[in-house]
Amino acid sequence: RRAGPPSHRGRARRAAGGARLTLRRISLGARAARDGEKIGSALLALVPLQDFHPAVARWFSRTFAAPTEAQAAAWPAIRAGRHTLVAAPTGSGKTLTAFLAALDGLVRDGLAPGGLADATTVVYVSPLKALSNDIRTNLEAPLAGIRAELGALGLADVEIRTAVRTGDTPA
Image: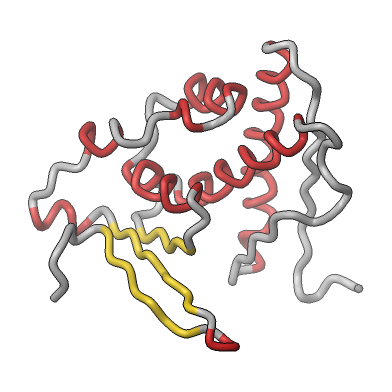
């Protein structure tokens, strides 16, 4: 067993071509409860929403009381560009954890000179076809809310488009 916090373990592997790939797994939930760990407010204090664009942070703060443990643990790794696996119970905000970091980057790029490129920037792969429309629906509310916050802040609108493609979609 490796020393260090049980909820954060990194593992280095060799990827194709010999490149070094570091995976970071963040596990929360049953293990934390079993071990009697108290992550809660101490961990949330480490991940302030102020790291997000003000429009993104305002939408999140108006929509949720606080980040979940999974979000607070994963955002620093995601924002640092590290490969991150979030393992947490259903309903803990795993999907929004990944999406919000990506949306924040798109908002920032969209507000920069030149704006967003007309290209696919983020790809989310779900192993279950049945979840694909749920994922799209779960993106529409944050996108609408963030766009409203951009307007309230007097900033330009950023058009972020979503699309769903399944294996049986004609090319």
